[in-house]
Image (cartoon, rainbow over all chains, first blue to last red; front, side):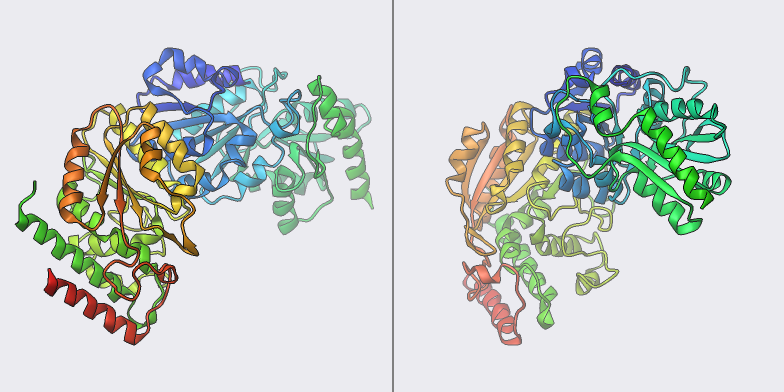
Length: 310
Length: 275
């Protein structure tokens, strides 16, 4: 996903207004592709993320389009006040790209794993929050954010993950519009990021048991697509959310707010349960430790489906 | 060297700004008196002499930019902008009233002439760096000016910006440190600022921040420096011009009694007579 993003950034860079900043992670973040192609518009900010955000804000005031990069955990929490005041309060066209998001940097442990970043970014006025589910969607999201004005946070997974969308034509990406991955009527699953693919697998698996599951790829957490979510909740009468993030403040919260305010139906939420991450040599193993698995999604679908019947 | 008439005219502007700050605080309205008074002479020199800008066209793309990193001192900037016609002078009466464009801290979206929304200390200098770098990328000749507080210089972000500006040779950036030696709760816990900035690779000029001649001279020197940014470290007096408030940290943010208000106006009148 990050390579796909890096390649797309280098395409977007044909526009001379695009400038790229990185805080000593350009190799990992794949911004080095842009840097090789447009060396005069790539700026190494050093390991000084707060200043990087402020500089990006300043650059945008003269009509440039800055994309800033570092690991998601540093791109949000470490520089929260800089994003809040210098970017969002000023409503500036700064794109903040958080990489190695969620648990995807499994080796580095809790300090490098971002499980609260969506909650933080979602609370900020003017901010758009986008979480692509695969490389295809990451490309589309990067282009869409480039074309949109204003502050945005793009959350990228570090690991090679299976494609949900085989082609860009298939992925009709539009900021703020959820995409239907599976059609169904018994339970609705709302997912973002890597879990979208897991949810699709779960839906396919449970179909054998006669439960028809709809899966929505809610790539834009803010502004959330109320219409699609409510339509699905109304149709299915039971909702499950799945995210690679704390269940506090992320997709699960956003969906609960929308559904709870409008047509309350049973909701289950899969995500990290108010915990820090930890090191693991294998990403899949770490996801499993936090319950973000196809098996767990199937169990939760059954549970929420039962709750509906009561 | 600048002629005495230029200096006299700017000192007159500075006096008008000081009076304007007092007028905003009339009737017991609280405000950041101390730090606003200490930057007045710098603000007057920039807006009424140094900067190329057009109050009729606040978004003129080749204008010089001013970023007040110590945003709480914005009262000085508001009065200067009103004097210049960026917004009607009557607006000054409404500072901080609900719905007014003039917030407690600078707001770039609401106020024509404000280049950065600041107030959370430490952030303005990085924004100024971004604007200066942007000018270089866009091959624009405008210059960027910033004012940083000495208390604000405890923020780590200031030194991140210091490193960045040196590395990217931002010689179109001129910053001032308003070294009034006091923060809200007493003496600052940072000193030797000039050697620090020198060590970070900046051109450093040390002046009396209330001497118009020295401010103009330092700005001229800064304009000629190539390959690195300039920090003009200004020795200033918090509350400058108001006898009872000078060098007293409790006037950092305060309200004036009617008696204090009248005394303060008289101090400014007396200062004019002496000058």
